[in-house]
Image (spheres, rainbow, N blue to C red):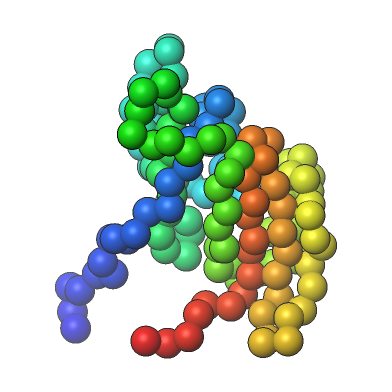
Length: 133
């Protein structure tokens, strides 16, 4: 259909950070997210969105006392679909990601690797796109 576009993501994995600006820089440099918007001031990041090149994205901000997000920094985990796992692994390692598991092939046909960001969040990248609906 001409003129149709992909719908914007409707599920946004969300995390908090002790230093959201530093985490944003890391996620852009190490993993390849794109900074879409950052709202905040010198006291911190209230809300940020990072887009993933293949679609979707995440939201994050600095942890705040009394906020509704009662998450602790470093408790987030996410699986992210990527095309070239070996190149992404190399990029992440060069940027200082804590590689938990080097690239490997799964028994269900995916190529994956796992890493932690400087806040301690777990990121698994793989080629598995899920079961079609």
